[in-house]
Image (cartoon, rainbow, N blue to C red; front, side, top):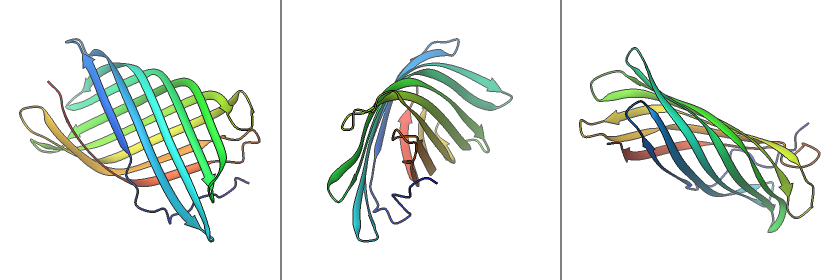
Length: 189
């Protein structure tokens, strides 16, 4: 059975995600996304930490299905995960691999809509401290929420996000999961 390292008593920690890209008139584009998260939890008297960073370079393709707007994406991800307990590093995983995702935005009224995003990455790397090599890691991210967009292209999104990181250690017993809220803002022009 997977080892339970974290539970739902994680302190309210903020992470951030930065996204920049370009899309031409036929919907084909390229984008860069960066993620950084640093969280701490106290479980059974032990202080546990989880640091995540990921950098994606993706090709994107926009599409419309009736009035729903979508973006399918695929490309390269570099990921780094550090898990520690009481100040000692248990996991220091670095990996490279493929990532693919799907974003859907369904208008409900003139400016408001429903938003969904799912991304899955398959990384291959190693635990830097233990020297274990070629460990596959599955990294799944899902967001569900609402969006507001004005006529000038500015938008605000908010909702819930869940992440799961599977197979970090060589014996496939160290999995991490996160659940929280997200708020994002941006523009497209």
